[in-house]
Amino acid sequence: MLISVEMPDSADAAHAYLRDGALPLGGGTHLMAKLDDTAGTDVRLVSLRKAGLRGIDAEDGVVTLGAATTLADVEDDPRLPYLSPCVRSIAAPPVRNLATVAGNLFVPQPYGDLAAALLALDAELDVLGADGARREPLERIAAEGLPQGDLVTRVRFTAPAPDTFRFHKAARRRLNSGSIVTVAARVMVEDGVVADVRLAVGGLTHRLVRATGAERALLGGPLTPRGRRPRGGGGRLRAGRRRLRLGLVPRQGLPRPPASRPARGLKGERMPSRIVTLKVNGAERELIARPSTTLLAALRETLGLMGAKRGCAQGGCGSCTVLLDGRPVVACLIPVVTVDGAAVETIEGQADGERLSDVQQAFVDGFATQCGFCTPRDDHVRHRSARP
Ligand SMILES: Cc1cc2nc3c(=O)[nH]c(=O)nc-3n(C[C@H](O)[C@H](O)[C@H](O)COP(=O)(O)OP(=O)(O)OC[C@H]3O[C@@H](n4cnc5c(N)ncnc54)[C@H](O)[C@@H]3O)c2cc1C
Ligand code: FES
Image (cartoon, rainbow, N blue to C red; front, side, top):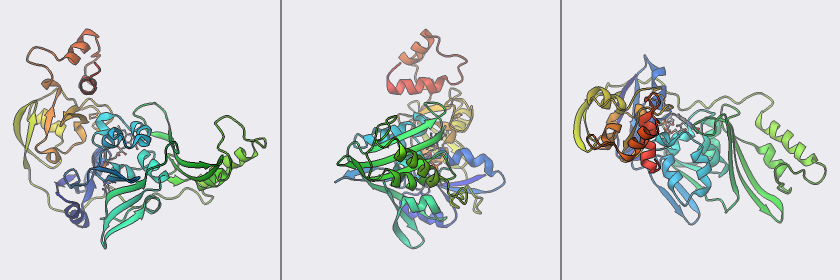
């Protein structure tokens, strides 16, 4: 059970809570959905929302992503076009507006699509640990896990040269679907042959892996278009496929999952209820909330706004969607104490008295409401994208 959510204003303060046994909370799109599984154990969280870890730098070809940078921030940044196909393949906008870069590194497979892209880009992590700050290759942490109590503060990588980075995710559906297999590749071709290559593969085992066998097969040969046999009757291609298989599935069996980042039970003080102030549909509202009170519960049960619904409570259906500081988010996964002071717009806030907004009117005119349960999601997302 969630007994406390701390809101430190710096990375050092956040790290101090982690050393005391709490777990880091990024956007909560994985962790919050798992809390039901921890019934009977006490869980303490440290929200990174206000810890100064959000932001993107891209100077002199080196990109630095703050750990709490959202996937939507990455998607919107014109300096990172090569990451767009990856980020857009992850969930839906109301999840991407919450989900963070560091959170994506520690979700279990078959999630972790951005982590696959960052592994192919040979990213390094800035980590605060028991002995202070250190820098570690993502590859090592993907293989060994992060020690309990350590905090990732930044992710760094060298921006790929134009047209050298590729990302492909095979999924059951085109949108909002976990991966069957994710492949990210940085490939440098010189004089018609592959001079350097890093391939990362997700979705196949418990953890992300580098497909070193496939890398070796590609090195030194021409990069032939899909479906075209290389000169030599396809022997190199067949050998590459075989090595890919061998590189991905070690003979001794699948690697064990890293031991870090379980949603473990922790001992600690139960945090008292707090006063939270929100600007809801333009009006200041105050409420008293427990650490485990979600934004959705606060809106419905305390403020009596029933427009946002509780469907899955897992971030998947979107029927709880509201605008948080102007962006659609799933309210079921947000501890309300972490958004103290924010502006929230619910579906009730879109109409002007009896006059419906253009988007609401378009829904009525087009008979688009169906049973009405998920209408807040569709309405908010379309309202925000201004494409009714
Ligand atoms: C409907 C739905 C669909 C999804 N689809 C996809 C998908 O297609 N692809 C995909 O990759 N993911 C998907 N996800 C999973 C998840 O949303 C993302 O991976 C997201 O990036 C997780 O980020 P977060 O900030 O919300 O993580 P959180 O839930 O906050 O945290 C996840 C883990 O990371 C740890 N953590 C967070 N920040 C740090 C830090 N700074 N240092 C150390 N540890 C940290 C947490 O303690 C926790 O163990 C989906 C989720 C939902 C709800
Ligand atoms: S996404 Fe929040 S209830 Fe389904």
